Length: 185
Image 1 (cartoon, helix red, strand yellow):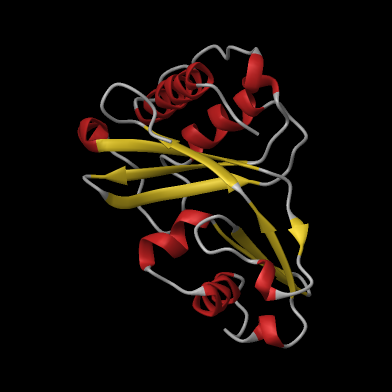
Image 2 (cartoon, helix red, strand yellow; image 1 turned 135 degrees about the horizontal axis):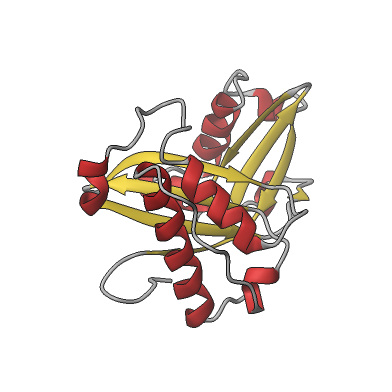
């Protein structure tokens, strides 16, 4: 799953247009397709305000083209992440967008398969499910066990649920963001 720089730029441009349209209560932009934008992939859109997390929403389903997923997520992250108030027009100039395009998840048989910094985690038990992107563990300096504990908490499970029968899945993400004129890998 290697996306070209052009595909990354097109996705970031689409995300920015959809995000700003939603904040400004304007019509959503037309969606362009072609290349990686046609791939049916899960993805996340994360927004930062002056470097601080301001919202993050995603979907792991792979039933629509990536362009549709990114346009939708970029719009709804502006006002639908329950942890944050809706983004205001006055904040737009200080918001940066990051996109994570996900591979399909696979179940692990041993936690030794988990590579911090490379893999994201999904923990499932009963009707509960939590997901953390690969970059979260790196940003916080977590080791494998701490990453597992926090993913369990994200699922509203006890931190050690991964030791007691919870299902563990891994995935990878191609992450790129707005900045200095070109996507950053």
